[in-house]
Image (cartoon, rainbow, N blue to C red):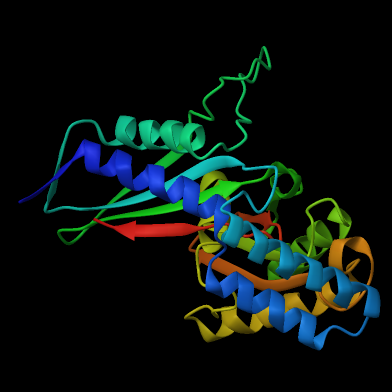
Length: 278
C-alpha cells in the first residue's frame, strides 16, 4: 500500500485552486485562439481578442481571469492501493479554504437558506471514486454561476429518442443566450439516472476541449450539436458571429427501458480546470 498524507492533499488542492483562477489551460486558450481565427464577425473577433488578452494578463499578473472565482467541484480518483493518512474529504476542503484565502480569490459560497456567506468558499462539492492503481488523481473545476445557472436536466420519454435529446441540448444552450458568457464548452450526459446524467455532464467538461468521444456515434452527435449551436446561437458574448460554442462533450451510460435522462452543464469561455497526480 502507498500512503499519502492528508496534508499533501491539502497542499495540492491549495495550489490547484490558485492556479486554476490565474492560469487557463492550453486546451481552452488554443480553442479561443482558433475561434478568433475562424470568426466571421468583426465585432466577435474583436471580443475574442480581448478574451485572449485578458487570459494573458491574468497569467502574467497572477490575478483571477474572472471576478467570479466559482464554487469548486473536486473529482478525486483514489487508487485502491493508496491509503490516506487522515481525512480525505476534509483535506480537500481545507485546501480550498487556504487557496481562496491566500490567493485573494472571491468567496462566493453561502448557506442556501439564510444566504449568509460562509466566508471561506467552502464547502466544495467533492466526488470520490475508487479505481485500480497506486495514485491519487485530483481534478479541480471551479464553476462560475453565470454558466452553471444556465444548465438543465430533463427526463425525456424514450419515444423522444436521440433526436429529442439533441434538440434539448441545443435548445438549452440557445435559450441561455449571452448569460453564460459564450463562447462555451457544453457538457452533456445522456442516460443512466437523474443524478448520473448530471454528473456525466459536469465530468465531461474535464475532457480536453474538443477531444471527441471514444464512441464514433457519440462523436458524430457532438459535431452535429456543435454545428447547430453555432448556427442557431447568439455568438460571442451574445454579440453575433459563428462561435457560440467551442466544443460539445457528451458522455453516455445505459439507462432503463422506460427512461431517457438528458443533462446539460454549460461552461463559460473562462474554462478553469486543473489536475494533479499524487
